[in-house]
Length: 156
Picture 1 (cartoon, rainbow, N blue to C red):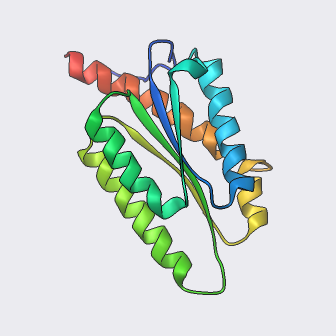
Picture 2 (cartoon, one colour):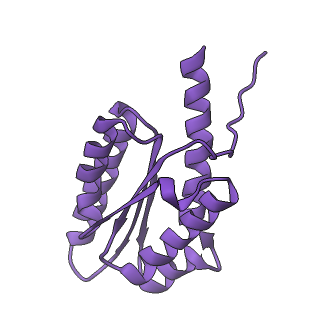
């Protein structure tokens, strides 16, 4: 039996991060978590491109363009969709989720989903460095593992 475990060594990687400006109180914290995890694993800020988009709904389009170009090793998507008083929440969540999933399957590089979808701002803040950890950091760890696993598969 052969077992593959992804390495977190990112010293030779170029990473793109797409961040929604809407709910930036949350998304800036997610981005901070991503930066910390990248730095801890050897990725310098010089090889990180950050793309700020208006909201979560715009993330898939930019992710698709970056993935098609193929000049990065992986993409992190960060956003925060907080339920409001209208059905807009479901539409945004569905569109963002399916868009990012499609790019992750069809694109050239791994894409990690770091878009929070919460009932209220308290939940979002708890997941962006509060009681529930930092999903930006967790997403980044997952991306580093996926890049290594996919590169291992490509070499075989």
